[in-house]
Length: 454
Image (cartoon, rainbow, N blue to C red; front, side, top):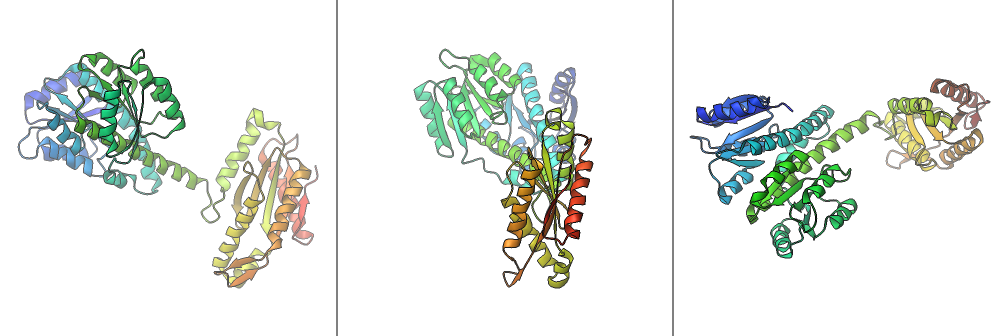
C-alpha cells in the first residue's frame, strides 16, 4: 500500500535516512524541517501520515501534534512521534497531544514499516468515509471529532492473570465502564452480546494464542470496527509486529504504565467514535437520498430501485406482489381553501394513517404530489383489495386536524389496485394497470377502491 509520508525533523541527515528507508518500500516522501512548514503541508492535504520529531527549535513536536489534532480538517491525520526520548512521561506527553504512536531512535525498520502500514490502512478507510460524509453535508463530524473526550467507553479486558486484570480495571475504571474476562471463549461471547468501544487482549493467555483472538475480533462483523489493543512482554516483538499486520490497532508493552494505558485507550476511543460519526453521516445521506422530506416515506427513486429488484432477481420474479396507488380526492381544493401549509399537514397525516395499516415488509412511497404507492409483497389481488379498503376506511373515519387543531378537514381517498401478471416483463406494466384502476375509481365517484382485472 503506497502513501504520502511527511517526515518532520530539523536535522537533514535524519530526514534522508528515513526517506531512504521509506522510498525502498514504495512510499512517497515529503519533508519539513520545522513546525510551521509541517503544518502548512498538512493543511494542504499533501500527506497521509506524519513522522514527527519531538526535539525541534521553536515549535517542538508536541505542539505541532497538538495543533494538527485540534484542527478539524487535520484531526484524522495519523501522527507518529519519532524521538530519542524513551521515558513513559515523554510518551504520555505525546499521547496527550494526540499522537497515534511513538518510535524511539534508533528506529527499528520492522517496527517502522509495520506501524506506518497499519496507520495508513486505517486512514484510507477513514478518508473514504470522510469524503462521503462531507459530500452529504449532514452535520459536521470533523468538528465533533476535535471535541470528543474519549471517556465513558465500554472496555473489555482479556487477561487471565488476576493481579494484572485488577490493575488494568482499576486504572481504566476511573474513566470507563470496564469488564474483565480470563478466556478467549468468554471474550467472544461477550463481544457478540455486548457493545464495546475497545478490547484489550493479553498475548500471553494460558493455553491460548492471544493473536488468534485478535484475528477473530478483527474478522467478526460485530467487532470489525472495534479497536483492539495488544498487551505483550518486551521480548514478544515479533508477535506484536504480526498483530499490527493483522490489523490490530495498538499495543502496550509490559510493565504497563498506568498513564500510558489510559492515554492509549482514550486515543482509540476517540478514533472509533470519529469513524462511527462518519458512518452515521454517510448513512444519513443515503437515507435522505431515498426519503421524501415532507412525509418521511420512501421516494420515487427508492420505489424504482425496489421494483426493479422485484422483477430482476430470479428468486423474486415468480412470487406474487400487489401494488396500490392512492390519491387524495380533491386535494387541490384543500390547498386553495386552507393554504399549502395545511395541505402539507394533510399529506403528513395521510402518510401516517397509511403506514398504520400496512406491514413492516410493505413498501410505502410518495409517488408524487398527493399520490402514494404501496407495494405489498406475497399478496394476491383479493388480499390487496382488502388492504386498500382498510386504508380507505381509516382515511375517511376521522377528520384531519390542521393549523394546530383549529381546523378539521374531511378527507377521502381513491385507490387503484393491481398485481403482477405472468406476462409482465417490468414494473411499468403493473403500475399502468394500477393507475388505470385509480382513474376508474375517480370516474366512478371517488372514495372507493377499484382492482384491475387480470
